[in-house]
Every structure is written in structure tokens, then in C-alpha cells.
Length: 311
Image 1 (cartoon, rainbow, N blue to C red):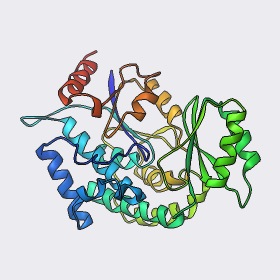
Image 2 (tube, helix red, strand yellow; image 1 turned 60 degrees about the horizontal axis):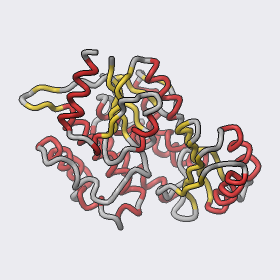
Image 3 (cartoon, helix red, strand yellow; image 1 turned 90 degrees about the horizontal axis):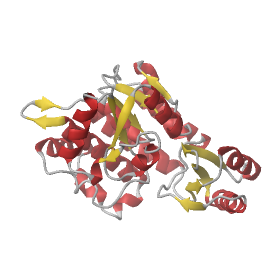
Image 4 (cartoon, rainbow, N blue to C red; image 1 turned 120 degrees about the horizontal axis):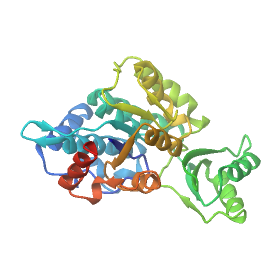
């Protein structure tokens, strides 16, 4: 049986998330690497007021994901734990690519800083994302299509689970869709802590600019199975992984389909990197033993991984 490491996207961030990482040399080195690339101490980014910036949020999630995975997989005394696959939601794909050996960490830090800036500059205000809970896909898509207009942009952006979908667009459009969704039977419409309209065509131009930057970076064949939450496929070819990283900001997230694929590929234990447990809750219907590192002792998670590898 196999272990899948999962890496969360925007909305999972919380104040102090980098300061809460384990006090361990490998974590300290990862923080120092990121700080060297950025030219300032990355620990300055996880304060509540700084996390109002999409750039800070994305960098914190990248660093937390990579540092946590490195710490989890380093069992001490030169020994390493074994993971079999990775999957990241949105910005989490960059941490996944680093841990899978497809992308250097320093390159990821530079690219994520650029990614955040491009997204923030494209939509500095008046846009975002809203989770719609308890409404089936077809019904929500019909509502979105009815609301969308050139001056009222809105799209279905995330297919996280059968009953958890996310829309992206202008505040006016999201409010209209939310009202109609509740009237159609949705349990709730909840604004997500994301200040830009991710995973829809509104970010096509920003994605094209990021693709130019990624074309100058070396992307390698991954050493772990890399599951793309945009394509809902396993990707091995470096060119396809580069395209996936560049354009995932403008493509819908197909997380539920991706988890179905990972399960079909014999992944049995899903381990979520900090700071939260959003992906763990989404995974549990398919991965009953799914765990979030933020909620368990590292040695307990390692024990579960070892037990799963011998199952």
C-alpha cells in the first residue's frame, strides 16, 4: 500500500503558521533557503496583517509544505521515510513538485512570489472566491451560467467534493450566485479567504506571463508519483508538469477526481502538510485513515506511514 502527501491551497493559511513549524534543523534550513531567495526573513510573512496579501499567503503555504514534508520524511540518523505520491491543491502543486523532485525549491520560491504578484496585480480588489455547500454540480453550473455576463464574471472554480464546490468572480456575481444557490437548496455559501478569482479564465493572462518565467526554469521528471489536481491525471513528463504549474491558477481544481485517481493507483494513506486539515476532511470518504500533520505528532504519522508500507 502507498502513502500520498497532500499540500493545501489558499484558504488554509493562518497567522503564525511558519512559526508553528517544528524546531528542527531541516526546517530551519528550509526557512533560511527561502529567506535567502527572497532577500528578507520569510518568518515576517505569516503575521495576520501580512497574510492579507496573496503573495505572502502563497509563499507561506509553499514554505510550510516543503519544510513539513522534509521534516516528516527525515527520520534522523541519516534514515528517510518513504512516500509514494504527491498532490497539491492550487499553490500546493508547487510544494508537491518540489517534494517530488520535479522543481528546485529556490526556483519554486521565485516562481510563487511572481505568481502571487501577477494574481494580485490582475485583481487588486472586488473579486474573490465563495464555497457553495450542499448543491450538486449540475445545478450550480446552471446558476453560474445564468448569472455570468461580461460585466458580471463568475465561474465554477473548484470541484472539491460532490457537495463542496467553489465559485470565483466579482463580489457582485458571487453574491447573486450565492443567493440563487441557497434558494435552490444549498446548505451554505461561505466566502473563502482568497482575495483573487483563482481557477477561472479571468487569470488566463497572468498564467501566460507565468508560463514565460517557468520556461526558463528546469523542471525534471518526478521521483514520486505527481498527481495534478488541475488535470486529474498523473503527470510524469517535465513539460506537462511545467504547463500544469504555470496554468493551474486559471484552470478549475478537480480535487475529487484527483483523489479518486490516487485511490485507484493504490494510494491508501493521505497525509496533509500543515497548516490545516481541509484536504484531510475532503479525503476521508476515500481515505478513511487520512491524517493532517498539524493535528498529530510527527512520530505518530511516521508510524502510520511505516505500517501502511508493510500492509
